[in-house]
Length: 495
Image (tube, helix red, strand yellow):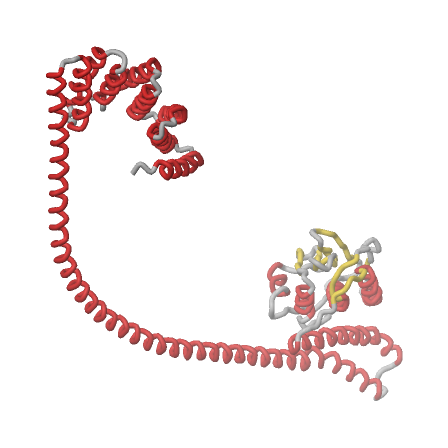
C-alpha cells in the first residue's frame, strides 16, 4: 500500500519481539522487509546496513536460498547507489551459491538482476546474462519473470539501435503481461463462480443445519426429561437408602451399647463374686483364727506361756491381714471408680528404705537377710503411693517364699531414661507356667514357705499401677534358685 512509515513501525515492533526470542528466521524476514522499505524511500545507506543484518540472521538460520536472496537485495541497493563493483560482487556470490544447489531455485531472477546491473556498464554483458535468465525462466515457465526479462531485452536492443528486436521483445513483454492479466481475470472469474456456488451450497447447508439443530434440540429435550426422571428416582432411592442405613447404624450403636452394658454388668458381677469370695475365705479365715484364740483366752483355757508362744503367729496374721486388706481396698477402688494418679518427682531410696524397715521384723522372724542398698540415689517421676505399694508387695512376696538364711536385696539400674528396680531373692523360685499365671488378668496365689496365704490381687494391682506410671513389670525366676521381680519407672516427666 506504499504506507512506508506504518510498515517500518510494525516491522520494528516485530524486530523487538524476535530479538527477545533470539529467533533467527524471524529476524531475517524483518530485516529483509526493512531493507525494502528503506530502498523504496531512498534511504539507501540504512538499507545496506539493515540488509547486512538480514544476511547475518539468515546465515545463522541456515537457509541457503534465503541467504542468496538477501545477497541479491544488497546488490540491487548498491546498483541504485551506482556502486557497480559492490553490486557485482554481491550478485555473483548469490549466483555462486544458487548454482551449487539442487534444481538451482529461482536462479533466473539472480541472472536477471545481474543483467540489470551490467545494463548501465556494458550492453553486451547485460544481453548475455539476460539470455541465461530467459533460459532458466523457460525451464520453470514463469510468465511474470519472462515479462521482466523481455522488458530488459527490449531496453538493451533499443540502446544498441536494434529496433526490430527491441520491438519484438517489447511485443512479447506486453503479450505476456496481457496473458498474466487474462490469467488474473480468469482466476478472478473462477473465484467469483466458486464463491457463488459456495453461497448457494451454504444456504442449503444452513437450512439442513437448522433442521438438524431442531431435531437435535428435540432429542436433547427428550433425553433431559429421561435424565431428570432417572435422577429423581435415584434421589428417592438414595433417601430411602440413607434412612435405612441410618436406622441400621442406630441399631448397631444400640447393640454395641447394650453389649458394652452387658459386658460391664458381667464384669461387675464377676467382681462382686470375686470380692465376696475373698472376704468370705481369705479375710474371714485369719479373723476367725484370732476370734478362736481370744475365746480360748477368755475361758481361761490358755496358759500365759502358751499365749506367748502363739502371739508372734497372731501378730504375723494381723500384719498379713492388714496388708491384704490394703490391697483389697485399693483393688476394689480401681475396679469401681478408677485410680487418680498424682505424679511428682521423689527420691526412690526413701521409699525403699521405708519398706525395708517395715518388713525387717518379719524377715528376721523367718531368719531371712533383708538388705538395703543406700547407693540407689535416683530421683524418679511417678505416683509415690503407687510405687510404695508395689515395693511393699514385691518385698512381702519375696519374704513369703524365702526360708532361713535366704537373702532379699533391692537393685536399681538406669536404662533408656527409665529406672529398673529389682527385688531379688534366693527363695524357692517360680516355674514358667506360674510366672505366666502371675502376670495374667485372673490373678494367682500360692501358700508361702510358712503357710502364708494370699489373694492373688497383689501383683495384679502392682501391674496396673506400674502401667499407669508408664512403666513395665516382668519376672525372672528359676525353681530352687530364687526370683527377681522387676518394674520400671520414668526418670523424667516428659518420658
